[in-house]
Amino acid sequence: MDIEHPSPPEHLLLVSSAKGGVGKTTVAVNLALALRELGGKVGLFDADLYGPDVPEMLGLRRTKPATAWVAGARAQTTPTISPVERYGLRVMSIGFLVGSANAVAPDPMFAGRLMLQLFRDTKWGELDWLIVDLPPGTGEPQTTLIRGLSEPRAILVTTPQQLAVLDTGRAVDHLRQLSVPILGVVHNMAYFACPHCGERTRVFAEARGQLESPLAAIPVLAAMPLLPDQASARGRAAGAGADEPDSLWLGLARSIVSAI
Image (cartoon, rainbow, N blue to C red; front, side):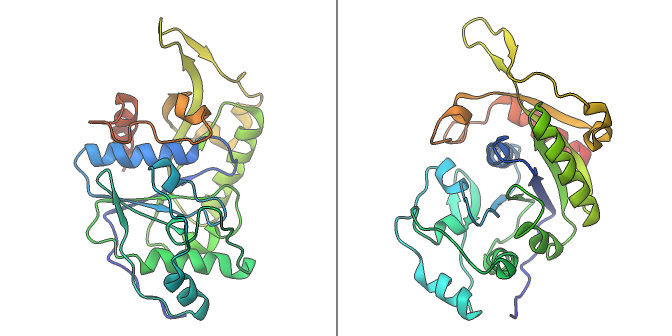
């Protein structure tokens, strides 16, 4: 398969967690919006082949497959495609190319190559930031995709929950095996802020053994609250469509800029 590389963005940032259900996509989408609000040219790549949620979070949906690219991918000859523009972001997801009710079930050995091809076939243009929302786990398609990217950095997303901390520790080891620098960790759903009085309540009990976890040596970039959108079935991104993202997301974006 002959794949040409696009012009690299100034900063390529992976958003990773080996644990599903920690709000990783919420972080990826709102971080992209915040970086855009800070004046950057931002792209967002949804690398979850089996559960692409970025389109839904941005209020986008395709009901029928885009048969031209899908057929081309199977034949290993695909045209370049343009990202979807949404809220000032350039966005690409396999969810734009298949129907919302369609499952993507390639040969597991081909899954990583498929996502790498989609990434490289996308005409990103000039970007300051390209955010890659990785799927959960430490296997495919993320391993092949990461190996095909140029000088990525990563942030980790976890909740203060025993299993999440344990699994995210595995993501640390996975990224280190692939020689990806880790900028820091986001503690998501760390608390619930009462909308009436502002009192903060912990959502999860603090995980046991955090000091022994690989996460203990990684700087904390932000502790984010549980947002109503994260608890909803639709999961629409907080801040999308607003004049500017919430100050907490802007604070996270500034922390990442400072960490580069």
